[in-house]
Image 1 (cartoon, helix red, strand yellow):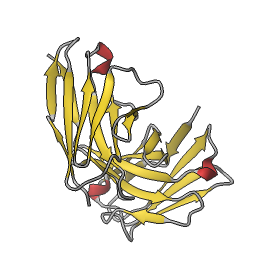
Image 2 (cartoon, one colour; image 1 turned 30 degrees about the vertical axis):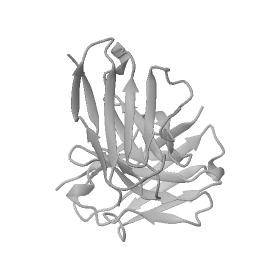
Image 3 (cartoon, helix red, strand yellow; image 1 turned 45 degrees about the vertical axis):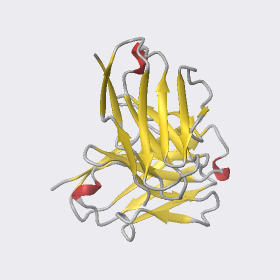
Length: 107
Length: 116
């Protein structure tokens, strides 16, 4: 199975900060990477697919980049609604795998 | 609006069985692959199983192979997961997911607790 390693596991930031989360794949996954946001008690929400494509309705402060094995999710200016847990996920194979999550907390 | 509504979770003893259901609406169910993914405090998000639109292709994670069976009824717009020989490590929140190649829509989840 392809392993996905996210960093950091926890991130403390303030409203207005620029935030970057990194995801590394154990082997090349081309651009078959998605990013999700999850809040307590809610289903994960798709933010980015194909590494850099913004899902419809997602604010433009969210962006994704990378290919191969290195990927990043950037929030250009953190908003109060953005405090949540973020996951990356590869879909290069039928056996999807997820990063362990990054919790974005209020500093 | 796409809606995925899971049901069937609950408390079950080790070795027991449960059948999860997912009622889909708001899209042409028979055109999409569907999946089950679970969330546990210890292991995070784990893909469990996938089924193609016509049930021709079915895949399982090694951790559930031989114990879980995924199926679907396109006439009823429903997805199922039959879980047998349940173990404590199967305790999780189980999500039904519509696949657009990637998980594009998630249900709210149904909680399965395996404990004596």
